[in-house]
Length: 220
Image 1 (cartoon, rainbow, N blue to C red):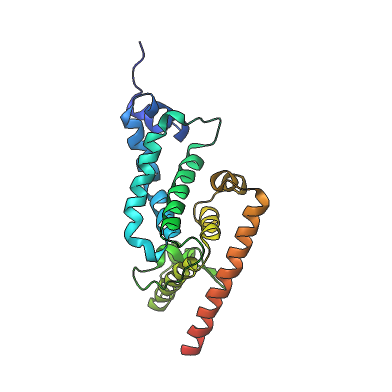
Image 2: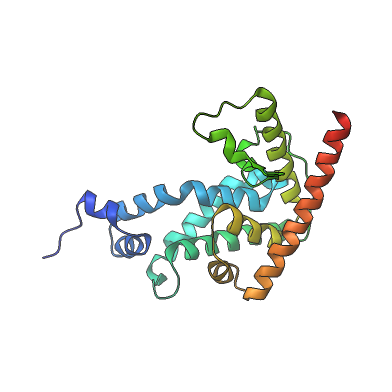
């Protein structure tokens, strides 16, 4: 007779095994999966949809998890890692919503809400990174904090100016740490296509941020 794993054993399980346990009837395995990946999936959906569709993020996020639950019996570790599989579902649900509202190609937005610091780690200011703000013993000035807040807001607005496929590639790689191989599986396209999307996304983001920095310098 088999017994469900103890809590410690469940905590030690990798994502793939947790999904198999959940598909086998263990709801605690799902709770742990959700807790592990809730924030990353929510952030990905929110930034992929962009500021104009901010009001629909919760619904798309919930739909993502509903699809994960509905597809639990079809998950196979031999097909793809659970994280890749889950982000694929999130990407597909978000892209479906973008297509529904006709915003799949390009849209423009300027974010004036939020403090922007959660996105500032994606942006370089010369040789400096937002990471220095969190370095041990570092006490950033109010001016430094204000700069990174503004830069983070601007970067989110610049992300909204990217085509959705380029935005997805940038977020998966630079924010969620996906390899090119995992991105190809998640976005269902070839390596060269992924590299092209990343290259174009970075080029457009640099141009967008450079416009911001020039305007900032002129205002100083």
